Length: 342
Image 1 (cartoon, rainbow, N blue to C red):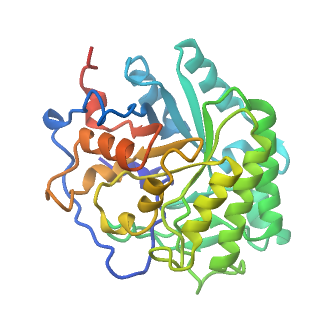
Image 2: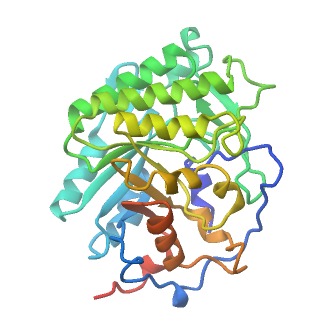
């Protein structure tokens, strides 16, 4: 199977060029051993959502939606899909998915994607071609711990003109869907801009400030629907060396913004030295924590057991350590292709 997280152009941009980040690709977990605990150490278990690109809604999401153990779906929507021309928004695909989900008493979470693992860069053409936006996007290198990938791109949010257009989109999305969606989230903070090729004026500090500005704006316009920022790594930082991670969690708590991340990987050294300790520290202090178990997560081994992760490990760690209220599962998750527990 093609790694859909890369093929879909979504997911982690974890090109952190720091020592100590290494992993071994392995086969996915044995479905027979992939069981989830009925209760998670006495805590309320996170709600299960499906995770997929909006383009895969019909083929991959619909067949799984009627499971009683699935509360809804998180759809990843690229910026260009919603704004083909400047200021002209098309939300018809979200409308269609929402109508279908409501008919089956399921909920919808939207991830608005402004960064991409691989070509094509699905940002509006005007953003990439109009000189006002200075290229609109920066090239990124791609290393997710499973080996090098093809180069990707990220919207140049540190350019105020680019960020302004992104916030216009957030406002338009809120005007149509605030109170109708289970949540809206922005993608992960991890990225690795190729500075030798960059022409947008990127810096780690300007990127950090831009991401916090988008967090604050999203919370401002979504007053009824929970607003969430994924945070896993910050470029230029390791183990909170520049206080980016600490400031992110403090900012989220003080502004009532939810946080989450694109991977649940128990005991992984890289994650344990970056965002995970803060999720543990801030358990119960954030309005919503939403964690995803995406396709690459099934390729990793637990560093302690040397075995592939099971559903129970994902669920227990996501709930007990990270404090997840919601967990988004890739449609390839083995348990989704077994009969639902009754």
